[in-house]
Image (cartoon, rainbow, N blue to C red; front, side):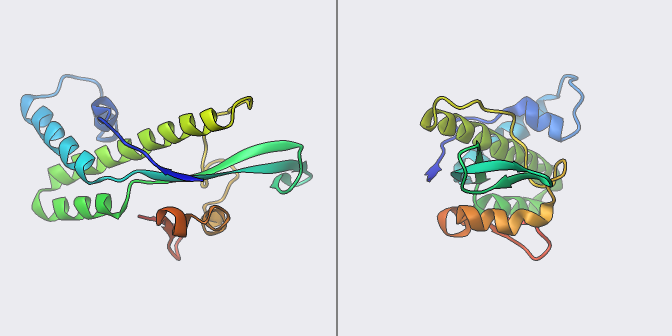
Length: 171
């Protein structure tokens, strides 16, 4: 299943955290820049997600996604579109401070889209216990599995999310 997500606003405090802000007051100039960039980001991003509920089993080597009824796991992929990457690249040419703010806001947009996708998945799959979200590259899930992961979800076709030869997601 795949769907679009609409973001009404972005968490500016979270964007500030991504920028290394430590909670002190910000000046008017930075506040105006963040507000301007937030409008640009919200105008250009097109958050979409795809997910699949999979059966899993415990094996000697760990957890295996397969066709059993022992456990369930949800595989999910989210993108905010290539337009977000393009917006960052254009800002890098124009103004590096603006590029940093836009990049931070795009990171916030991805996280908020993931949060929204989780809520939708939970609504569509009532009765299951939901754990915390984690991704490839964390714990003992190697980032080298990105290609297989996207293949299982048909993410390239469903939401345009691909993986590079260096296991980086694009867009």
